[in-house]
Length: 312
Image (cartoon, rainbow, N blue to C red; front, side, top):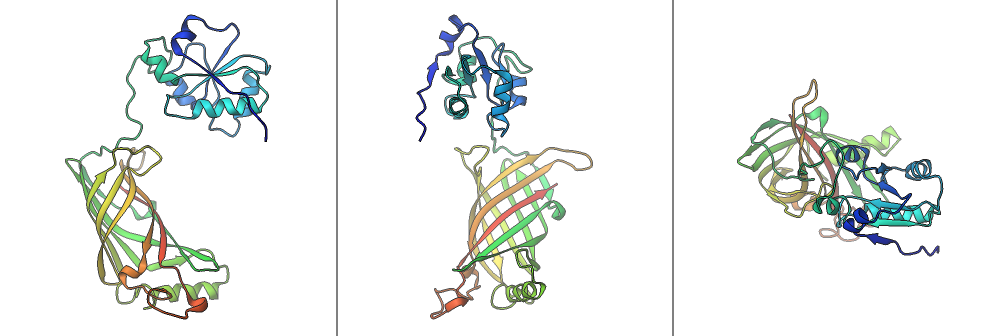
């Protein structure tokens, strides 16, 4: 394994007082962020881009050139990741700015950019505007994965209608699924695919003829204080009715505001990824909790759900 030398960190005040001659200040954040706020004289190569090595080589052709990387702040790994990549590319004089852009800004040191001198807004705010929204089925998608010991099946089911309401920050709502729209996506043989869908629609699983609709009623939403833009920001608490049976359901989700764009109005989106224990609603086929000697008929109890629900 290649042994990389340690990377020295430079204090913002020390850099401002004693800049190194010929040093390249490398902003490793997204170009949009570089346009908003940046160290004076810095250049930009986004460390999240797969073309980052090519960008760096174009900006700094000589690997002996001193390069100081900076990212957002002391909690993020952007500058450290960039420094590691530079060392692996053969650059020999690599440093990082301690505390990143935020530490430089906190010292009152000069900045350039469209938002220089302005406070940053929160990266992931759970605050939602009061209002009412209706589900847009064409923009929404619900995917499921069912598994057994030898493989898995993947498919979809459609949300037919629903609504959300936010009042003084409290989120409630209801979403209705049309269980008759269950589809399979992984089987290429149309006969096998039809057999599986019929199996899922039957009394073995979701009893769709007698109970064509499933409903999830959102009774409350607890906003998660430690959420980031890439983690769930709420826990939804409610009741799921499936196969005519109702049971409580809590699940982590991300709720965020969608900007308006012609011809669409602004709205809200809910995204979630979770496992649902189907046996809680009576779908017990193949469950070893309820049957013995299942052999190849065994089906794991959890069904994995990935959903994106859009409300306008």
